[in-house]
Length: 230
Image 1 (cartoon, rainbow, N blue to C red):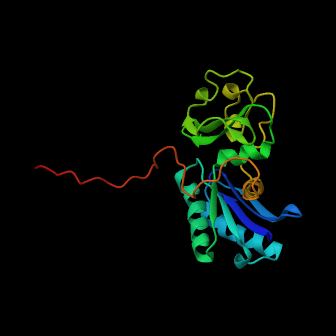
Image 2 (tube, rainbow, N blue to C red):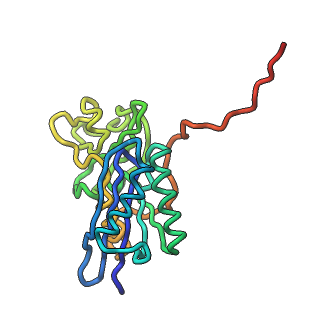
Image 3 (cartoon, one colour):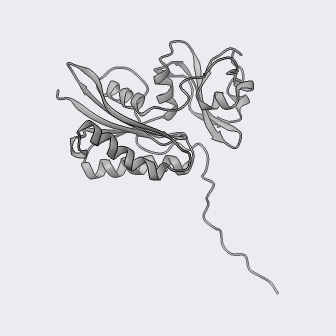
């Protein structure tokens, strides 16, 4: 089998993260480059230049890619949409597959944890997106959204919680005395996860590049105008 070059990016959180990984049967996974930026309001402005920079620094062209990996959330509507639209557009233009991965799974995968834990990210509105894991490679629950108090309901009080959500609500999620790392998803972990699965090794499942919102977007189409009576 020839080597596989995978471009990965995630825009489901405050991070705009891009990475390029190469996998070959004889050499395993080799990182070729990447860009990380944290800016909740500039996903659209940052993603395309970050992709171009990552490819240029690695001496690669879009036509060299064999697959694209993209985080599908859960996350806020606007940021998440930027990454998914870009991934699908590139996949269509280059005629290559696009593999989606739950963003919570990406954070879990990077943690390398072997014991049960929880990943929680910021969902705004004083809520978090979260899921429980048996190990870094095995998710135990479906992703959910709700108040931080829901995360450890019925669970041991010392169950570790990692991610930005734990850092935002340390009193509830028990992160006061430790750093709940990793806080945000890394495209490097996303790319590594995808090439691991493409090589046939076990890990979190790959999914279609469709958004995992868990709640309706704030913007809604206006309803019919009300009749004004005189």
